[in-house]
Image 1 (cartoon, each protein chain N blue to C red):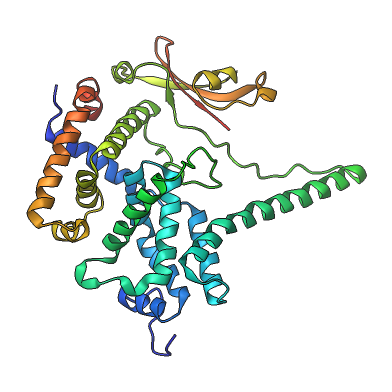
Image 2 (cartoon, chains in turn blue, orange):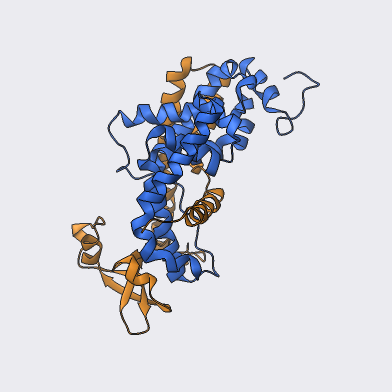
Length: 199
Length: 161
């Protein structure tokens, strides 16, 4: 590391990627600390499997270790770029036998129930979110990607369009279609569960 | 009935809030550290080799843990033979599954109040819910918590491990 270089925690993504590309693998750690969570969440929503999401997150960053120079900041943010790699890796993993049945040593536990939340409300909320996650996983890939990036990862339309390789108008219509499909999928259940959100 | 867009928006917001609390499992970071270390030492070349190392390095942790447990067990046994041993002060809190509904969720949603009751249940209940049960321990009860309605109806169960 050059003597004037900022500490890893303060360095920009561009600096860290430069270091990584220049043969300083330690620069990967702060990049993982910054972008690991969004990549994991994307992979989880995309695959519907915590085990796959963990493996894919790891593979994405190991890939970055040796392909840091491939990132082009002109095409969007690093998180969106890494999520794109994650999407491709999930596709590859899904072509292989599933490993989900294997126990994970410390797989991410669902967030602990808040002490203040009654078990009944917690149960109903969990079931609703489980149905929503399942429905997202069943969306056709182009719609799913638009929904995850914009609604859940808070990417801008422009970033999502770059990430998906399509025009801005296309990403808008994909998101709209994704929401319509989700509404249809969850519609039958909402009648029974509509009381839940009102409590 | 078709759910309205606002209801979908509320659910997406709830999911986003849940995701905000979610982090990648700790082992991902540990495996990446192993890959970084290997790269620093120039032991591995190419992404394939890195990925292999990162995947296989997980073995080191269980092995180290097993070795530590073995040493502690051996130490305790040795102590017990000589002097009375002390019970470890800190006992980790039991982990629990999420509540598993035992009746249609739509029916549960009509419930206005419920309370939690601790009770041991037969392990065969695990099997009935599609959870794995060791045949060797099938006769043993398992600690659980029942979510019970005021009229005594059991709505859901979670198991303490």
